[in-house]
Image 1 (cartoon, rainbow, N blue to C red):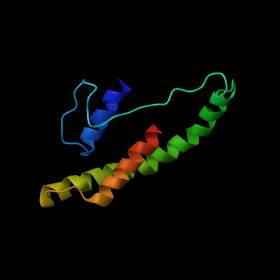
Image 2: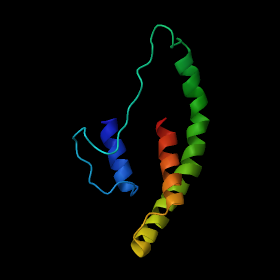
Image 3: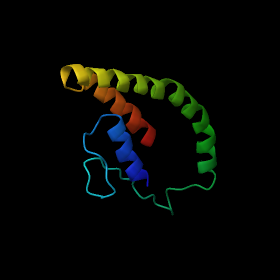
Image 4: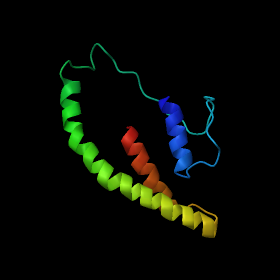
Length: 102
């Protein structure tokens, strides 16, 4: 489901021009490495990470997501006028979306 949401998000952000389907062979891909459960995981570390992530997500929502939304709207007008997605706006929106996933 997360992979499909990623494809839909890329389509809505005007980063890919094909309508996303449920087929796995798409241009937008999302892969996660599988963690090593014996050596790479600590029992209390997920709780600490979630507590430290709360302020991070608040800042990301208010600044990066709103800035990315403004960039997408401006890019829509730029595509309408020039027929091309400006590279700087594309890189910024890609950085905002990829930073949230990783």
